Length: 226
Image (cartoon, rainbow, N blue to C red; front, side):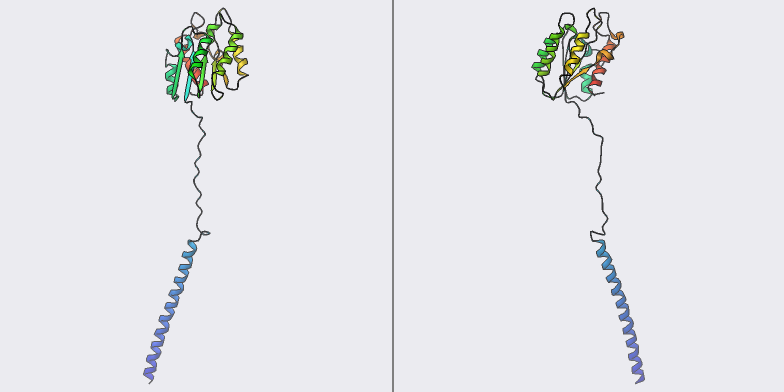
């Protein structure tokens, strides 16, 4: 009988040990599930901020440039790196350079009106041939015509005059300045202030090859392309 009891006591002891191990095991599993559940909740998930990339605002490139000029523009397109090629190299997609020797301002404005410019920029380099035989007041009226030939969204850059003739070009440059104050889209390219007498040929009008190269560089800089 005592042996039987001892055997039962032994069985009970083994059973109790197994049961305790099982309970401990279950408790660990419950804790593991709880932690896993927490890791999946929104409140405990790490917040990942989106990467915001910033860049410097680039100036929109000119898509189109029309240049209307006389013999000085002819020279600018012939010497060194031509004006046309320089504009293309600067990223302008559509370049038109219309230049003729001896062209009067009225003839140049006729060409501008035929061009039907709708966007981009226009560079006007006219007036040198008007100085000796023209009238500053009439020149002002031609500037008005030029501004009416393009929409207000098109900027017109007027290259002022730089000559060393027996007739002064001051009244013409003053007229360009006056008109620029009347039109928000008219900008004076002050070549007179930029140029040097060393760049002039003996006739006091046309430029040396180096002068033309500098003239091209000046136009690109004024357009914001250099």
